[in-house]
Length: 358
Image 1 (tube, rainbow, N blue to C red):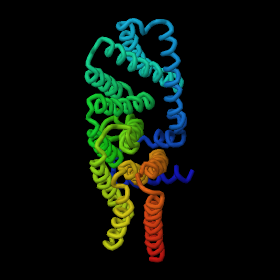
Image 2 (image 1 turned 90 degrees about the horizontal axis):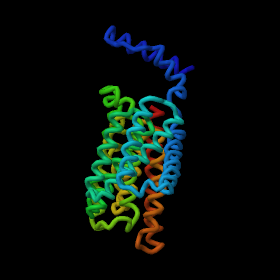
Image 3 (image 1 turned 90 degrees about the vertical axis):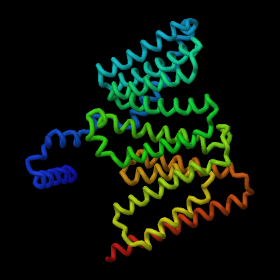
Image 4 (image 1 turned 60 degrees about the vertical axis):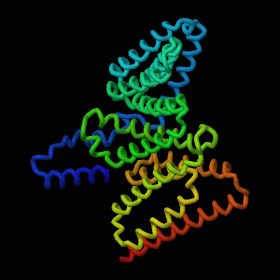
């Protein structure tokens, strides 16, 4: 009730300042806020829907294999095209979670069947991958469904990685990571601008946001898991530098939000961050996870914050075991990082205490 009253008060203040130019349906806005579950299921339910759709797709694929559908190249091609079109029509016609699961299953089946059919017709794999990207992008334009939009966004990211692997351009993973880091930063920091630009984008904002994070993690995993891709590890620091620059930029934005003006405080924070990131110069996955955490913290995106923390724990563990150093050297690196983090904590705590006394 307190939040409802606060929203009413804020709307009244905006109305008073803007005058007759500000128009809003207060009743509809408050009704939607009070009953968010009636409009959208929780994210966990949506992700379970995607997982359920994936399992259903596997089961249906198995049935089609037993039925001999895959014996005909044109048959599997027809199944793929028909399934994609049916998924689009179903999403446009019905807006229920159970049908979301079904449509996701059909869409995944359609995309995979289409890819197999085209490859069996000896079409170049690069062309097939571009076709899948176009279909996924078209789904984003045609559909404003959360689950299907999320799957389409992740599909585009996966296809870009497939293009890199298929053409043995492994070092292009650095460009992939830089691209998604830039897209993620823009998408997070321009939420209001994106949502109000077009009605479709307001519906697509949330699924694309989580899809961008997952796609970014694909690239971080490719960089963070040694020997997963045959890239030149002598240049892996390139991604670290680019991501670290993004981290410093987000820290600058956070300091602007909390109105930290004193240059000595800013310099100390920048210095501590550089000291923390320095040992991870050959593991951009760690700085990438930190970028996700800071961006999510800045815009108060709890799901992204949790994903970033889980990713950070995983990549730190992976980095520790991949280091070609003795246990003593590894321990020194971890202890040094811990000391920097503790110093960071006490410094921030001191600043906050000083502000409270003022």
